[in-house]
Image 1 (cartoon, helix red, strand yellow):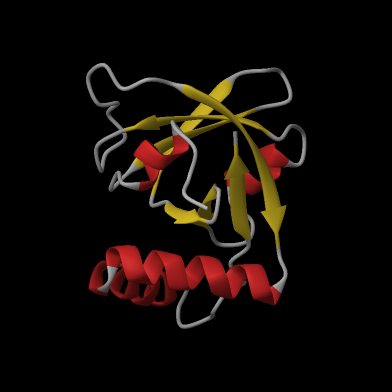
Image 2 (cartoon, one colour):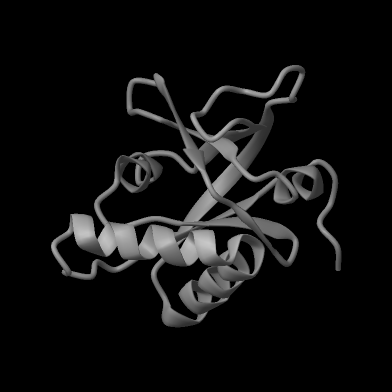
Length: 132
């Protein structure tokens, strides 16, 4: 089943501004790579990131097409959505495969760079699955 509009449009974007919310309601926007996963969108992120901490308090997120540096694209709509964090191997594998299919060598390079930054220690990568 294809993605429902407007998530389908975001699945085609190179970067999406994922905004999560602090306990006090303040927004924290983060540019991310995102891939379509059935009728949802998915993100992979290292354990311990702020996104994951904020999602423990509220599953509410907003999404908007953006540049690599997080600058929203002109006239790109802001889409309200709900996010769920998954740590199971099956979901992680599906998300990693979707990101690899979409970004190819860039995704592989990002993972290598992450390992170098972490001094070769691999960290678990929970996935964030987003639905409208």
